[in-house]
Length: 329
Image (cartoon, rainbow, N blue to C red; front, side, top):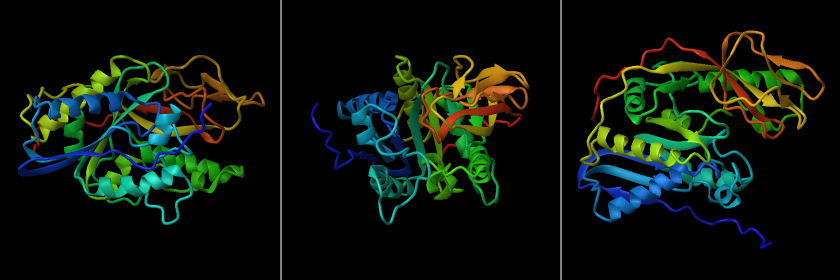
């Protein structure tokens, strides 16, 4: 087998309209085995360069493959998970640190982010929504209405929030366990990914989970979402579909790590499988049971998670409203 050669660049495509407007960045393959965004972005580039779509206003930046090493390996990460603890690294320690030093300034230079992902097990697409407007230390935010408006137009009716709160709880558990975790896993900023970085730097962003990794519909979901984002922001003359009027809304309340390779699920879970309080979810390598703390839902179950990494998330129904009022720039 040929020796793997680490990539030395990231391909970035940019189209600047001749009239002023918002700056949108669209990302694919932040995780290397999640290629629906790559396929959709490549399709859009061909449409623009072929003259079928014209960017008339603002700036559109497209990054089909954000993490080329992970993409080359056809796996989630190159050296580590790029979409955790994202930030500038004064002394890069791995490939993802070097990517972050390119990606973070790029994100900070834009107003809106659409980050396209997929997930391991079966399930329907959903959008990750940030917090409501707040001035709290964990994730202060002022653009919740604009972000919710974007979510309402992307297509999927399932919406999930609570990401940073769930991670804060997970970090506290790791610190209290006494287990010798890597320092990065104990950092209070561990939950920061692309969308969280955008919110922290004056913009807003949506992570769209377009379906299961190999689902042939996932690239179509991603492409539709890009077109609707262009239409909503008026970067191109594309018909804007009406926003969703009803949503299935959930809040992440916890994240559970896989501690050992012999930690196993009791069944083949799919994202958003409902579960009753007290029902068994999985078992640790020592035989101890993991049960649901309340009625809720299993999210992002990953039976192949590496020890010390996220195994699954637990969510509950949310009463949060999605404002679909037209707030276009």
